[in-house]
Amino acid sequence: MATRLPMAKIARLLANRRWRQSFTIKRQKETVDPQTGRNILTAEQVEAEGVIYPSMPEELERLPEASRVKEVKTVVTTTPLTAGSPGTLEDTVIYNGTPFDVIKVEIWADYGFYVGYIANSDMSGEAVRADDDTGEENPYARF
Image (tube, rainbow, N blue to C red; front, side, top):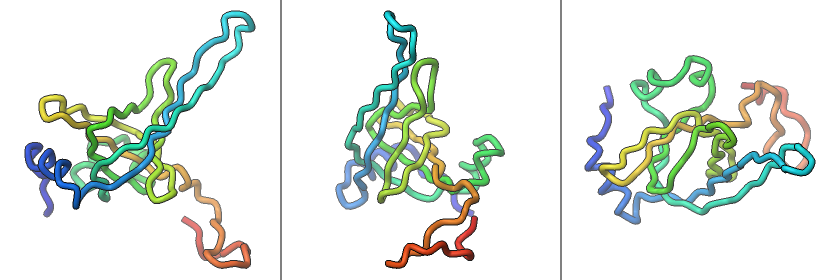
């Protein structure tokens, strides 16, 4: 059974360029226009680096049950992540072109990094397109 790496070792992994991966964080914030009273959604994209790997079983146990049915990965980064709060939507991590919603964040400030659990945003149970030039629907590509 795999065990979680000690946090100090993870900090050393982040310092090693060979293990770091690049990804984009899409951060959205909701504000209210004082003149119209309407919600305004603003977004920014932040380029980040970190280590991303498939979540281990003991990590999945910490998540709500509904989150466990999706593809979940763990991201360790020095860039702040948010799982959402009033006025701020959860961050979206775009990794290898696939969007993942941040569903939980652990802050390890003593070691200088954040551990985020991200779930695939595209796993809706609908058919996905075949990976070919025809663009025809693949009936076998259901989740």
